[in-house]
Length: 185
Length: 193
Image (tube, rainbow over all chains, first blue to last red; front, side, top):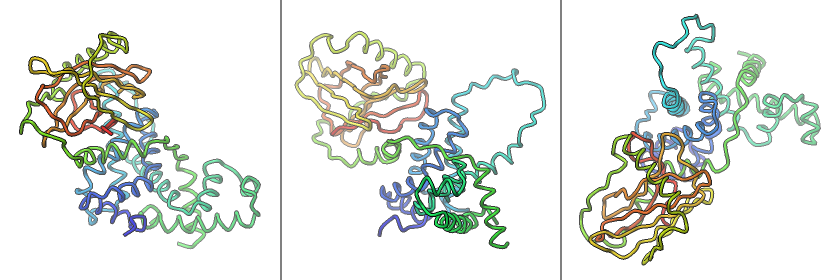
């Protein structure tokens, strides 16, 4: 069976049971950008992000047997694996110096809110990467590069109507994927 | 929720999520090596076995301080030996290769007094990084024997002299990147071709 047609959950099971390298590579292609972006946000360092991403994928291979469908989606499991790899790398990098922490209130976002934001960003990146290329292209130009639909039409040499159609189609597809992932429920 | 509400929610998520980072080229190779490298190496056939068991030189399990000293000693050899060091009479050579044109050769000299000298030359392998080192392994029967630890210079090169037991016959050889004080089994960065 072509592993490209399998769901994430089926791929993880293939990796766990059959130690299937092709299934692992399909998972990599679906999740590499989301995982790399997540560890990059946590670590803020390209070199450290390289190492942590590498460790995350090694952990996926090692720990695939621990995945249980009934406990959640493959995507949530992969998010947890990647985040743990990033947090472990961050802890290893920063020596903990007790007694030097500033005694002032932290007005930043609460850890829970940050975790939710990280999870949402991860799912959004996975969802965008699941789009057909031509739809992903317009979404990335619109939301990541900040181009207007007219500018996208110019950039891609497409009629404005086509850009609008692709954008709407992409948003509908994203809504479905994100709802399935539990983000927009 | 209406279609428009759904679209608005999706747009809100797209705007609040930062742009994804570009995954470095070659990351797939590295990830593949990290995950599958050990398994691929284990699949290879052992050429010959002289003894069923070989004493394990488990440098990777030494304490962090000793591992650092071993890496430092290797680094010193990089400086001290280089390509123009003491002549080495190689009887056998094996080649290793890895992602991003990383490569290595291992020359084995004549056995003498129970040991066989070994000269390892590494090219294009970026330094392991602070708190990390490289470790070379041989598969002997079903055992993984740690042969030497080292690091590379900023140019990615290193030359390391070591020795193995004279009666050790190996099947495959590979190099892993290991964390000082961490468990063995780091990602494979080079393996015999």
